[in-house]
Image 1 (tube, rainbow, N blue to C red):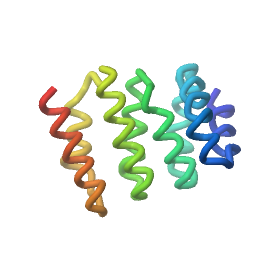
Image 2 (cartoon, rainbow, N blue to C red; image 1 turned 60 degrees about the vertical axis):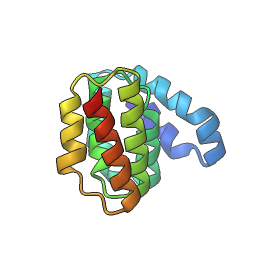
Image 3 (tube, rainbow, N blue to C red; image 1 turned 90 degrees about the horizontal axis):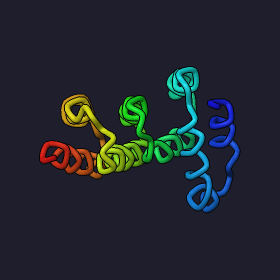
Image 4 (cartoon, helix red, strand yellow; image 1 turned 30 degrees about the vertical axis):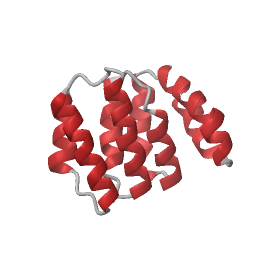
Length: 135
């Protein structure tokens, strides 16, 4: 299933199509992932383009698998602002859906380990940490 997911994220050229249809298709493919697919995603992640990683982050926002949080936290540290924004938004979505069981891991990653270069990312991370702590 990872190969199909990988191809999907690589092949959609139109941002409109991606946001209208592609995210849902990618999220469905993620819901079908087995251990091998998750390993493939984690292995390939940092070799992919910024656009691909951003799409990956967006598509993980509905995943109820704890490995999705791990991937999102990895994407958060990738260094690109757009990927970081998508990762934070998806972490928040996963949290609001009740899928984050270990809030401490997310808080630690956002609060202590995450070195945001942009003011926007710092603010987004701080806001999410506050929400996670208050929950």
